[in-house]
Image (tube, rainbow, N blue to C red; front, side, top):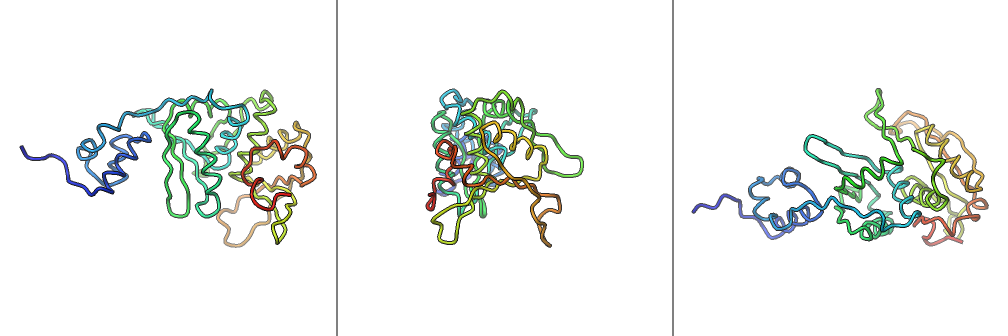
Length: 262
């Protein structure tokens, strides 16, 4: 009988099975690797059972807050109800953020959830195929489409009800995704953390969360430069070192654990 699937290289087969293991559908794998669906099915049929369940209860309040902060800083939803697609995508810098990616992957492993982690151009991209994870994040963050921009506005939900440990984790995830630790030239001492956002409402919520933790901050508008990616205002929340030291040993931010922290 004539074979109905294409013979592939070992590397191609390995890629198909890896993508199937992390939860991509046959259609998604076919599009990603430019391979017919019948061929994808042949090589992935023993691996393609989608693992959508994610045990978020396996994580502490602080770790859950970290995931929310990471999503607010660098994440997005890809939800298609018509075919049951529930994906959360997060992006990190491939050159600078390998340690953050490893920490993030460790959190997902605690939940028994396999995730897709790939290098795409200059980024480390995480894709989590899980309705449970989308629903968890949606209890804390609402994404609203803008009429004049393809980007979504993220609004925090029930912020006042968040526990202290959850807030600390949230700030840690936000620092690792959207923050910058300001060091001296020799990287022997840092002078605080800058968190930038184009969302004025989110800026206000960040300030209120930090204030509730007993942390005083300074806010200002970032300077705009010719040739900038966006002409929209960029708001900066600056946490001075003296204020950060009140809680920095409790904030689960990888950037605060890098060399130079003193």
